[in-house]
Picture (cartoon, rainbow, N blue to C red):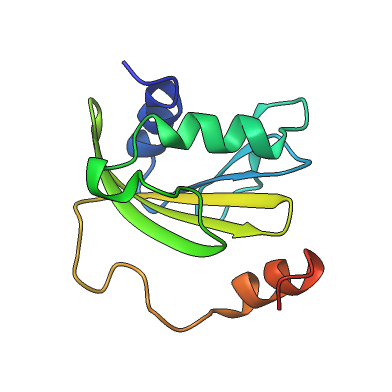
Length: 125
């Protein structure tokens, strides 16, 4: 069992929820219309985030992970499938996880405003 599976269990219980882990913050679970709920209080390091998501990364994407920019993948968690958007900019990492089966257009290839802001703040844009 991957260390992230317990977090994905929380995520899969809430329709439309999003799990976020970002360097310098804890793990946040955001349900639609509700304030974010902290699942981990202490700030996470980039190494901790990379290590946790490395455990669930598909074998074909492991070489060279993490790469600067965005890496998208799906994971079959015991509680149900999830989609992961992993972003690395400089020494900062952010992972955004949503529940659901993989979809061809699960993550748009264009850089959304939140990603652009993250990359700019980390010095990667």
